[in-house]
Length: 107
Ligand SMILES: [Zn+2]
Image 1 (cartoon, rainbow, N blue to C red):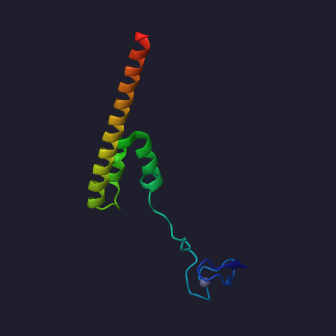
Image 2 (image 1 turned 90 degrees about the vertical axis):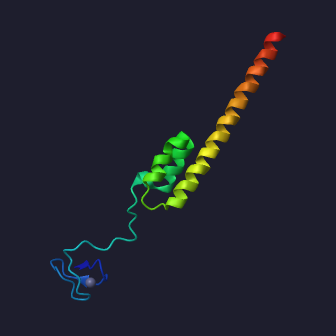
Image 3 (image 1 turned 120 degrees about the vertical axis):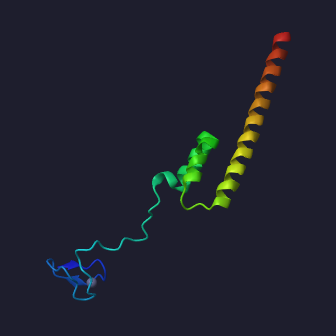
């Protein structure tokens, strides 16, 4: 005896059609809410990509089939602004460091 994958009733091992629900057992059983999104389109992957390579991960958003055009534009602008701010902060930091080293040199 085995269990029918469709209705969970006991059926014969050699049965090709369930006598309880009438489903054919040759067909693959229904999978539970299968996530068909490939790994490179997963939100977590995109977030990690954005965090590590910044604007270079933008193509992932643009290729994403389930993202609306408004979201794509919004995200792109947001990421570009964020990258710009980060760039400015980094440059400011480097500048401050250089000033600091200059101060040290003059001592
Ligand atoms: Zn069945």
